[in-house]
Image (cartoon, rainbow, N blue to C red; front, side):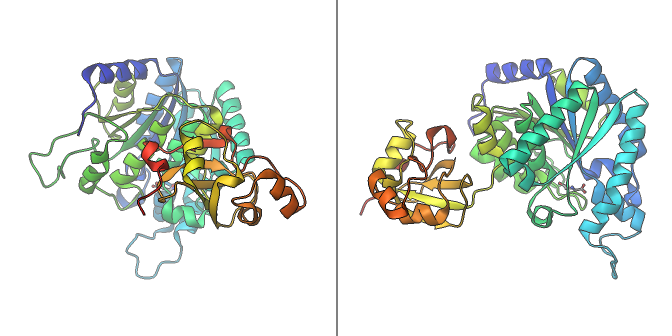
Length: 398
Ligand code: GLU
């Protein structure tokens, strides 16, 4: 592993001290105690820490898990219940108001109002809904109300299975242009081995988010029976945040003073440094919030023009179109050998795109009866994959 330089770490920590917009995510294991009852002291502790950060002039958005866990407690239905009456989505519906009730009480002790935002990946993947969510969040922050976000588990079937609040927190951080993402969990951060079984396990204090070793270490991360995430989803979330230039800290959520220490730039948990600099707002959204619906396979010329010369993708450079998507949907864009070049918003629906693949503009108008757009993917709507390089644009050996 190529560890980041001491200077880079010091720089990132100085950035944490200056951070104005902060997204804090709390895992279920931090908030639910024995019998899935709310851990009142945890609510009080974190509300006090967040209130202190706000008093310091920071803006905080809280992403809070715990709906399913608290729902279990309320329903008296542990995970091993032989005759469960409620599914996870129903448990989330039962637990979410309890969660907000606890937060409301905890923050009102500091004179702060709270606001609930329930989101799905689908909401943030749709540009229109994404912009609404972002505007309302900004409005709440400006008016001094604390936005508390959770996944809308009750309606997000797929999300509850595949999604997790770590990914949601990264998307929220990208959406509001956060300066740091803080994931508070029940472990101290990333270790190079399982600290529960390996006495010599070493904590990784800082690494770059795209370090290939990061995911390998997650095999050692503890996974609670409460949250859906585990350390792997934290590393993936840190990668998403890094893609838009946001650092992430993963730290122990039950340790008093943890947030204050993170925001003071002290060595706490694991710091993931972003490699990438800031992107435009639209590209940020493309990097983190969008789910792709199809794939465009390019010829070598188009791949080079897109990746190396920063040109838009024209239909003439496309060999094959996969998947079903509508105008404006996000697609994967791959080179001649199938290597991912990046993702982009396609200006043609999949059927039209397939019909005009390989054609020049004049032939397109003739084939479709009109020219929907000159570009299939405009260069402003293209985001290169991390590490996509010149070789990816090369023709594979025959
Ligand atoms: N949204 C879920 C809940 O509130 C938690 C998902 C997660 O743990 O990542 O219970």
